[in-house]
Image 1 (cartoon, rainbow, N blue to C red):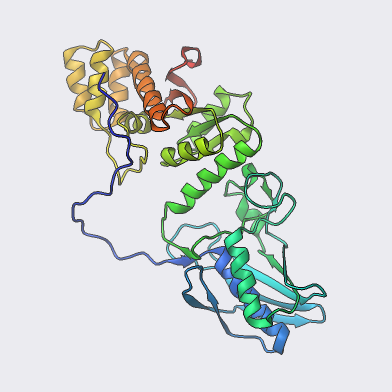
Image 2: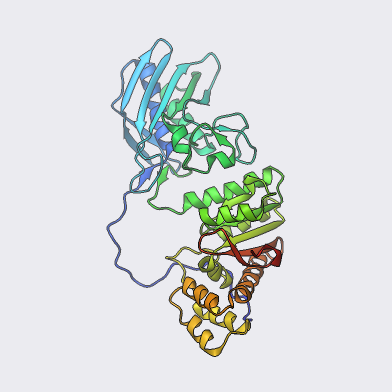
Length: 378
């Protein structure tokens, strides 16, 4: 077998490309919540509903938001800012971030969550269990925005998101222990279209939550189908152990080491496994290609004929190579070599700090066809 190649996550391609029209950026729930809170605070203070408010991003840049709605009664003032996620496919695009601000007898800004904002029920998120799922950066943004209006006077701010509980069903919140609504998120205040940053952050957060539950094993899956197969394979593990890692295997492994996870199981299909076997830990299709030459060499190591080796090495895709192995009766033998190589890559990436097992599933995600543990093969 070849030596394991460099495990550094690859640089973006340097070749010039014709780029499509730039996608439009948007705003995080945290930024919109801070704008709504400032609008409500202004209405509470001077009795005039503002049409626009200006708030600061964490970078110090200031941005202006239209106020969709504002009202005041004897208990306080409320304002709504509609989230614009730009061209990002964000489930919270169009959400009505709502802030209700009222005077308080205590000093400072007291922050709470209302309808549609999730409640934290598990440790590991860096937030108090039982409190609202409003992350630290949005908390600081909301506090700053309100203080710009009321100064040091005491106020209570309640952030709510009508329909947030339904939106949360399309997120990983429930598994992370955030129940009843969405999380108020954001680190820069800006949503970059199709950004991988949010997915990477969710993967790292999922590892943290599993570790905080005392779990020592995580199962990394490349998507929904492989996750279902992994859960069927390892039914004794808690649901929190299963993480849809997407393309962020390297990020998950680094965070696992930091959090004291001792074992990782990777469950995937042929394409992702081939990229991992080549030492590519960021496996997005725009940043890496399947090395079918590697699969040809594995075919040779598994005892394949010269003709099969050549066919596999020239295959169009990893799936094509998989089908060639299957037709030749070599799927399990070659697949096990592939899984073993992936295991070696994962262990080497963390300098042996974590043990690993690997399973390859078919394209339904339900059937294990090869694995480092022979007992897993159906």
